[in-house]
Image 1: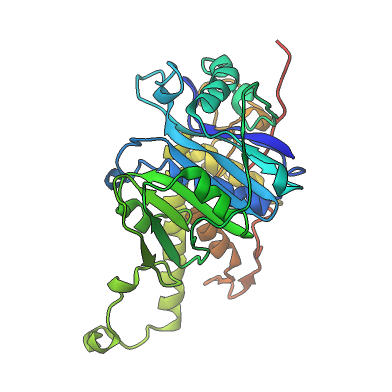
Image 2 (image 1 turned 180 degrees about the horizontal axis):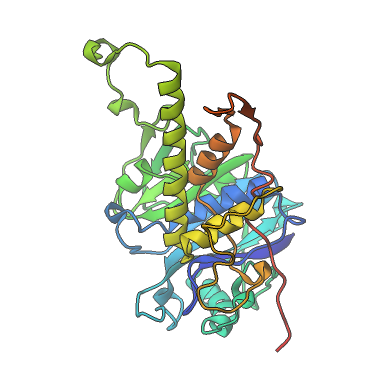
Length: 368
């Protein structure tokens, strides 16, 4: 059993990011992205209806032989370093990715003391650093000197593995029993102690398969359509407004409208990334442009977007991790073949995002 830290939070001087994350030699990128989207949704307080994290959110995600285990919580639960330089309180996900070869020998930490020790040993030493390379996806294994709990495959509870359903389990169920019940499935996730049912219904980045809600002891299923809309909110076909069915627009109008919509989505995505990671929008645009060959110069755009005047290397910048919805929007945009109005020719674009993958995984800099 090999395990690497997987920690998403912020420090005093640097915005939210993966501070610890294994490289892609340990975990495939497609699994990593699922884990990233999952932990972001676990600690999602951006939607005010979700509320602030009240209790530690015990989180488990299994994909094949890979297990993500940890908690989403306020930093104040784990240590005194709980605010950024503005005094704003910090939250985060603290856990590990475990590659399991024998599920009969799986040991996990089910106590807050386990995660307090992780925080004290791995976050506190870098919390006030001003060297960004020290908090950028560091690949680190961690074996605490603390007693762990052995978990065994055992069907205690009927869990859900349907991606179009979220099952709300009684909140009085034991977390260990829920985890042990999940070990028999190939792909399944669990989040315990959400504040309310609305959070489970409105997840944006990752669908929760199984959850518990604080104080809710009745089991129920929430059903979704494949488009993500709740079934009970689907409009009935017979009530369709005939007046809304209009003659199809001319080809040129449809083409321009589609391009404008895609362009607006791209701008919206860049602004959301800017707000999330604390980077100026032009910094993100510059990074994106650098991923494409044969760029032409633009005299209207300044070279280098470092507003501090200090020359930076891309390797020193924070990991650029777009949200799932933005990755899909960019991928959709890249997959279009846009007909130029003046030249009447199609410009082929990439149909995958391999050339715009923004994330890099650094090594811990032990110097100085």
